[in-house]
Length: 224
Image (cartoon, rainbow, N blue to C red; front, top):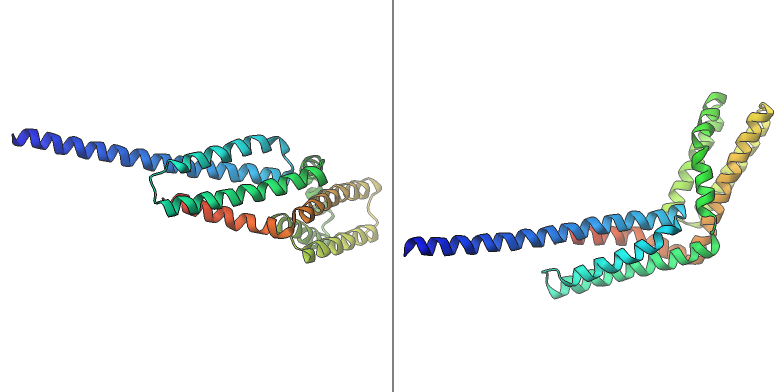
């Protein structure tokens, strides 16, 4: 009789542990899916990879459906669903604006990446401290703007770009080197201005809400 009781208890514990393990695995999978979704959203917003819009949308719908089946409290489920919906709405607004205002964003992004190593090498070979400092500042401004845009950053970008142009002109470089530098800087400017125009249409506030909201959702999924 005791042996039968032990078997029943052990079976029940095993079943409970299996269910708990399955729930944890399911929640972990959703967290990983959302991380990938954020990566896709960043590819769309920062690099103009519009071919990722369709899989991004399918994935966020899939995540929302899975949240419905999570073994969590009703309040937590509703809060998570609302956050996911707000996140999806923001990405959709930004992606729509980008497609309208920045149709060639990925092309200009690609041009800045393809020749970046050569540009850095030429700047380094010139060895002029002022030019190196200006380029570092310009790169930093662009990176900050893409992630958290504001008008003051755009103004600083324009000012530093103009300063770089003057610096290069005054160095009286070899014609071929100067032409390459100015050509690259033009592509850099085209990328920046295209993304700036699209961000303005989408509203800077929407862009700036996205990152903290995605962090909040990641945290919510991690602690489930």
